[in-house]
Image (tube, rainbow, N blue to C red):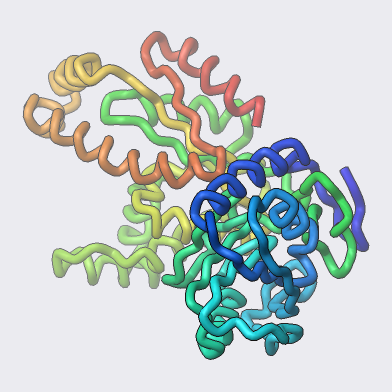
Length: 369
């Protein structure tokens, strides 16, 4: 761990991984620009190390320039990009390769492209060492990407925190002071997700938040949010995500003593996953993992048909309905699996066996978070 000013940072990406990604990225640049004499433009201050490594590996003739633009103060983007400073070369009719240390919102790129297009260059390509797909808001294509990362604040290899950290050859991420364990628990119908949630909440002192239970509580007690939610339901409409998020936020606030939360039934879409992320960040926390119980479809069907003999639920008694429920589950999970895999937070766990066996497998995942 390192200390920069008032904040602590933990190791995140090694120099070896960075250099390997630069090697791969430069191969693509050399292939695309064979026979060209491009102008490489490094965006200061952060790109100086990245630009040096790219230019050293370029096979042909090239020119190099550096410009300065900025949209960061401390650990947050100001969303305001200052005027371009430093470009004196005539770029009319030329191929320009912009070298960025990191692309997040894309505000800097948008302003820079506009300025370069005014100077009538032939072609503009953008290369970045780090890229935050979750944060990127623009339609502009990023031609060369070294390493895609979650929306975390990082320092090292040219990136800084208030001036410090640029000289580090490894990259570090901002250390979280919150030790909460927050799980998004998924499982197909019949996987035993509810049973495991009850066991895990007691074992780890977590609060189990079932979206269905939260809705029923608010509607039954005619809370302001419950009444609002019911007004949509009565019209046959989906309850807006912002209403659901407010309900979940209240549940989190009511259980501040918990060491974390098990979110059950939410999120279901990428937009909801992003909304949950924003909610937890506002409380200085984050999703620790998405844990999905994996069980063979035929086992699930037989479990539910057996359960249907005593549960009284119509959707447990019809095999076609059961198979459709499982199909819907996989469709929803696929979206979220991809979302959380990008953050290295997806864990599939074998859900076949006795309850204690499955709990043991889940516990290994949680203990290693």
